[in-house]
Length: 197
Image 1: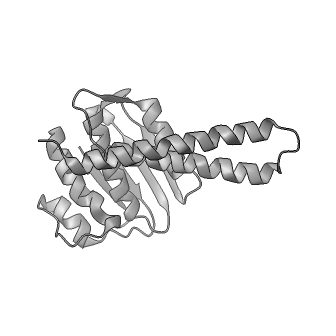
Image 2: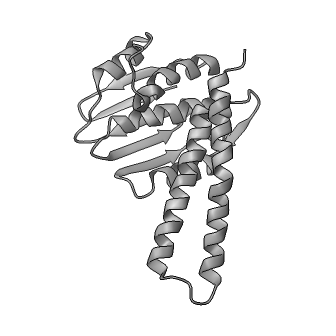
C-alpha cells in the first residue's frame, strides 16, 4: 500500500527545491553583475539558500517516499548532511558505504535526526558502516536523551501517540526500519548513544 504521507512529504520537498534553485542561480547572476551588493550580504543569502536546500534534500530523503530499487551515493549523502549541519553546533562525521539503498538511507537520516535531538547544546554525530553494520553515534558532554523518546527504541515498542512535530522522527524511524528489513539496536551511556542498523 502506498504511504500517502510520505508522498505528500516528497511532493512538498520537490515543489520547494525548484524555487530555491532559482534563487541560487539568481544570486550567481547578481554576483557577476557590476555594482553588485557587498560580498558579505551576498554570502549570507547564498549560505541561507544552501542550508535551505540541504534541509529540503534531507527532509525529502528522511520523510519522503523511498522507491524500493533506488540508491543513494555516499557523495550525495555527505553533501546533504554537510549542507544541513553546516554552521550548526553539531559536527557531522560520515563514512558510509559507497552506495546505500534509499530505504536504508532514509532509516539512517531518521536516526540522525533522532540523535540530533539528544544534542541541544551541540556535539558530534558520526554515521559509519564498519563491518557492514550502519552505526549512527551521538556524543556530547551534555547528552539529553529523553527516556520518553529513547526507551521505546531500546525496548522495541511503539512510541506514545503524543509525540510533537519535532519528535515525529522517533516513530517514523521504527516504521522505516521495519519496511527496510532492518533491526534497530540502541546503546546508551552518559555522554554518547549509538543506533545500529
